[in-house]
Length: 232
Length: 236
Image (cartoon, rainbow over all chains, first blue to last red; front, side, top):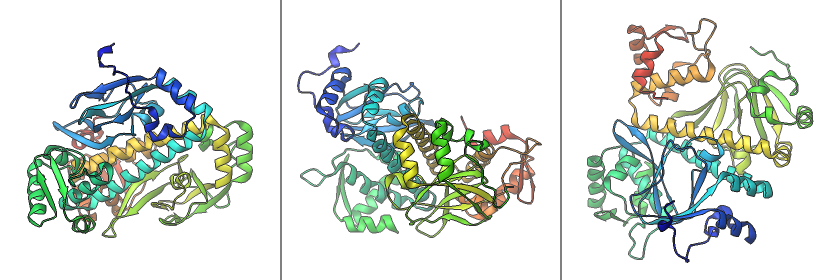
């Protein structure tokens, strides 16, 4: 297929993905040989909602936003993912179609691993199943929390919580900026609001000296205050 | 309604065919049948509490239950409903943490209990079983995600219609094919929809006036399912 996208030598190892970190070297090597290595530019689609999930995408480097279908012409961002995370795992294991579209937020590289390879690995290491189950359960708990949160919280709280979530997920760079660039529209989709509200709230936070922002860069100045708002 | 002291055998349990335990080998099943317990819960009784440590997993033999969490403001939010053959309380068991939600019987229910060690034994021996369990988990995740998005983006009216359809899908209907096979208090309904009880009552009577549903005590009859689909923007 698109072989020109295949990268030259310095491809990162699949070992950077925590799921495979404990596998024996030979297993990882075999997996790397059989998997397809791909690089995506910012904005390109990695997997498309509705395709049947025969492969998972293991992110080695980069950041990805996960979106769900058009609902009243609004894209709904369900989650963000970064290096070490796996996309489509539960669709593949649940024998479903991909239920989300993954779009690269910046240059993203990783491996496509097929179902048969994955199952072969599971047969060899049954404890991996438990490990994955734990991950899925963690994810489920997060979603349940968000159900409660969405049902009972106000926009400012959600935004504060989202900013904290972005920080824990992606960290900060040397200047203290959040290590991810998200536009207002992305933020609005994530907290299920519109970008005017987001802009107003961000400005409010800035006036209170809680955050600083410039275009897509976001910097947390007063994390305690932010936590306080998120908890209220 | 299940009777007290009625303990089914796993091998002959009809509910089993609806659950993931149908993927178990016969020997495993026999073992499980010996090891598991069955307990009867009255309506409103709590099966487990948020914050407890799990000692095993629960499997609903016959009955209905709600899984709920408390929000920061102390308001209850139902996150999941349990029907015949569903198993619950296993997430915390597998992740080795405390229960993250509470479970309460919505009507008189018979619930089987499988102790922790025995469940893990089966899980480790039987790859097919664990893959199936994973499949269930994945599907649960998808449902939960959709639920969350509905909560966030739909209006209360849309949500109520969606929830009514969801209840129909989950618990089915009585022999008249219209009356929902579950009796929820208005408060429970509000806690599923994620709104105040008064709002649910108001919207229900609105639906009733438009002849979309009929109400008789706690019984809800869905007269016009297509209209509900339209109101709820349910596209699946």
